[in-house]
Length: 240
Image 1 (tube, rainbow, N blue to C red):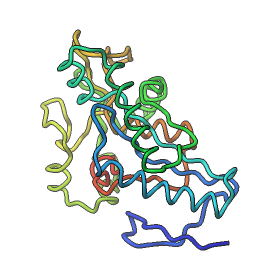
Image 2 (image 1 turned 180 degrees about the vertical axis):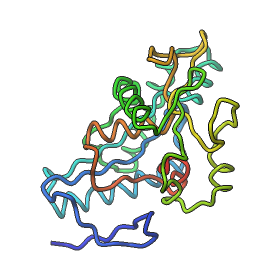
Image 3 (image 1 turned 30 degrees about the vertical axis):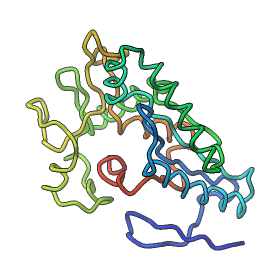
Image 4 (image 1 turned 90 degrees about the horizontal axis):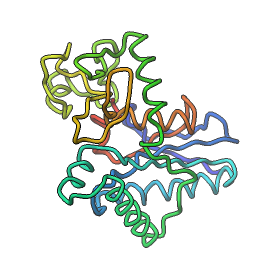
């Protein structure tokens, strides 16, 4: 069997790939946010991981490899685009998902085995947030659910950022209801003119990071082999 070496972000080195179960190799790739045309930066990781997917299938057998790549179809950029064009969010996400698929086909990429969408996983997200609150890793504040960074001793291990870098680069709002400036949102309230769903914390919508956590866990299990994405996702998305 061919030895495969992959770059481990946490270890900062290439390591020999040893699947958890050779009969069930699982890879999750953070997918595109469908609010506009994909650019070359979007295409690069999906082409790279298409090559890895093919190699895994060649090595372990196509029937023993599962490749999940999500579609992020709820996010503030999508909402803003829909408002600009005076159309529904569904119109925007349907249009640009189609364009994305056409672009990937032109590049010769295989389709993933599954392509979960964030809006189909709201119950799973709410359940995960409840669990995090119960375990002391999250808290409710003014209709928001925030992840408590201080509750996770090894937070920052993946990106290797200092405390100041974590706060500065987190792309999070400094708000008075936060317990810590680095805490990030899992759920946020929606106004009457914004899309939203019911939750124990009021009508709102999920934050970006909780989406991939739930989709990966539901379709691949709480532990799987590879979580991939572009280098720009190391922080904050993959860290979070």
